[in-house]
Structures are given as C-alpha cells and as structure tokens.
Image 1 (cartoon, rainbow, N blue to C red):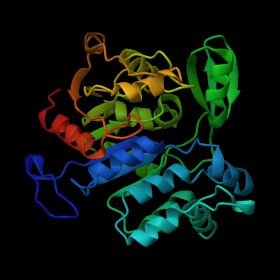
Image 2 (tube, rainbow, N blue to C red; image 1 turned 135 degrees about the horizontal axis):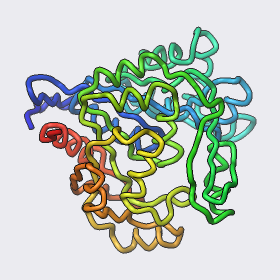
Image 3 (cartoon, rainbow, N blue to C red; image 1 turned 180 degrees about the vertical axis):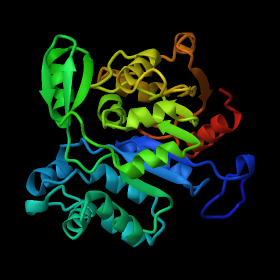
Image 4 (spheres, one colour; image 1 turned 90 degrees about the vertical axis):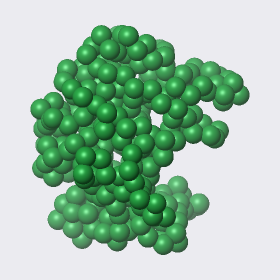
Length: 336
C-alpha cells in the first residue's frame, strides 16, 4: 500500500488513483468504518438506511413527518473536518426537559430539512457546514418503515420493535420488507453505486441496518450489475434480538435472499480472538462470536478474507483503521 504520511488524511493510491468507495448500511458500524476509510481516500460515499423509528429520530419522524436523521448525523460527524467544538455541539444530547435525549445534530438536520426542498438537499447542506470528506446520501427521500416477518408467520411493523418481538417469539426472522413496499432510491445513490470500484456492505445490524438498503427500488439492481469488488463485512458478534445463533453463512444467506444472488463477491471477517472477559459479557446476553465456516461461504462462490480487526475496548467492535486497511487490501488483491 502506498500512502503519504500527512497527519490528517493519508491518501491511498492503488492502481494510479483512489478507489471510488461506496458503503451501504446504518448505525454505529457504518459511521465507525467511515472514520477509518476517510484517512485513506476522499472518493467516499455513504448510502444510509432511513428505516429507523426509535429514540430521538423516531420522535422527529412522528412530529415532522421526515426521514430519521440519526444515522445520517452519525455518518456526517464521522466524515467531518471541522473544529472539535462543532463536532461536540452536533453530538450534544439534551439531558432533561421536553428535549431530553434528543441530539442537537438531529434538530439541526430537521431545521435544515424545513428550509430545503428535499431531505437529501438538507443532508448535503449540513455536510457542507461540517466540511466532510466524501458524501453522505440517504438511500431514499421517502419516509419508509420496516416490517419483519418471523419464521412462525408473525409480523411486526417498526424497526425499533423488531428486536423485542423476536425475543418474545423466540423465533428467527424470515424476511424484512419496507412500508411502502416500492420506495424509490435516490438517483444520486444509484449513480454512486454504478461508478464505484469498491462496494462495502456492513458492518452493522443485519436486518435493520444493512438489508433495508436492498429493499429500496433500484439499489439491489445497481449492486448486482456492478463490476466493483462487492464486500460484505461480517459482524464480529451475533446481535441480541436479531441474529442469535447465526453463523457466517447465515449472515451471507440473509443478504443474498434480500439483495439477490449476485451482490457479494468477498466476505471480510475478523480473526482476532475475543478476550474471555468480553466474551462472558456477550454470552450473558445470548450473543457470541460469529462462527465463520469459511468452506460453506466459499461453496456459495464467495471469497473469504480474514484479518485481525477487533478493537480494544469494552465492546467487540471493528477497529476502524484496521478495517479500512483490510478493505483496501481486499480491493487491491481481489480478482473476479
């Protein structure tokens, strides 16, 4: 890998230019990955799910009939190049009163939406205020909701209710769908996918962060016909309320069943052991390390790459810098 040693941005230049990278997802997994990738390339686009309906985002959805701003805000902050005080301001959450738990960044984005002609225009304007590296795009401008169907036939509407309902039913999720079902993708998001050299899915909540992007009309089709290297970042741990007991192949099959059989070329996974103390905390919540089962994934025609990706800390998450380098190494060495 060839990169300059600038303190702020190290520009990665394989094959003579920066790869055009598109990341699809939502939640903390996507924003953490963006923090790593922005150090190596400026040709970076985050396409973010807008199916969230919980917490402060859910309140603004209900009150203002707008797409949820929370995941968008986190991605903008991850790519921001502005004064630390400005970042702290956008991440500030009100501690009490009518705004308790709400973040200033969400309110700022909601206000910008109020003076803009569309949600994506509001996102662009906020991104300009924070001078971000790359772009952050909502997958759609429509105010969509997520419905889950379980293997026993039960259904639940609302992203924030899925984990609770899954634990109540003690039953796996069969599929998720959008309401309304045929939300139209933002054209800019589709164009970004068409022009990408590297498309990254995840890491993040399988059914509520990664898969919802494929349910928006135009996204799965654009990824399926892309000649880019299409990478699924396998989660390090299973997730309580979504993927208890899921193996690596289970994750892959869920993505393929919703996005189509040609949306993943490579699966990138962690090979660092989870420390025993951390593992015990996850096992107490009916979660644990995702078992890779390499041969089973490769039997689907998908390459598998493993790297030491675990961050040091109280939760088992990807190290943003290590993940960025793993993705760029995968891109540089991948061959169809």
